[in-house]
Length: 262
Ligand SMILES: C[S@@+](CC[C@H](N)C(=O)[O-])C[C@H]1O[C@@H](n2cnc3c(N)ncnc32)[C@H](O)[C@@H]1O
Image 1 (cartoon, rainbow, N blue to C red):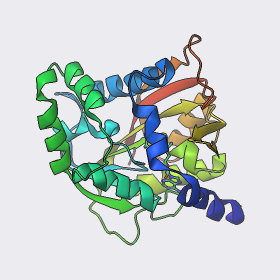
Image 2: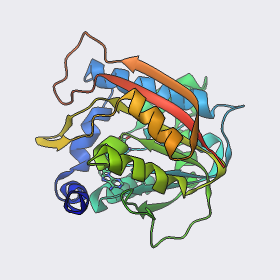
Image 3: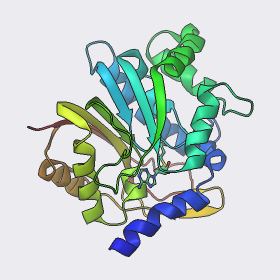
């Protein structure tokens, strides 16, 4: 167990190429990835729109090189902290945040979210707002009891984590432990917004194959209960039958909102 837990993340450090991963986020190139992204963006919009979740501090766990997951939340949280395990992912994020040459073009995704919010023309303002709201990009390891060590942060009002548990956790036991670790970052009754794919065994990043932990709905709900969360909302969708994408074998998508139980 200790052997697996210390080597699995290093596969990420060595092989996870952010620019190859970002291919999944080029809208209009693959109907299945578009569908996955649209599913997530619609539920982020519903969760963080006016009357939804809001607060001071939101931490995104395992951000990778992506910002789509923060586009709705940046309207209702004062500060966002992005995090990831790998140096390259954190650099790629900084590149976009600081408008450096070669940064990924998120504008089609930002425009889509603005359209969901009924404000398509304001996409440049949304980009600026997100850049202002993300205050730090920190190292994170959800397999550690204190995932953000050595950083010391106030308890967050909300955590987001998308497509990270199944990537980072080698076993179901490690996944339960990771949920316990994440709970410590939240204030009492704070929210965890979790999304990902069901029953994924692998996904490709460029020509590199990454194993994933196949998550089933029953396990996920039980694990959240056991680790001190109450589930408030669960949205699911099956992988569409039409269209093909052999870059991953997920069977469905989920988006859930849970609350720290105290
Ligand atoms: C499939 S990507 C998801 C990225 C992004 N959240 C998204 O929604 O597209 C999985 C991410 O998990 C990160 N990761 C791997 N092991 C981790 C660990 N032990 N702790 C935190 N993040 C980890 C990887 O670096 C990678 O960025």
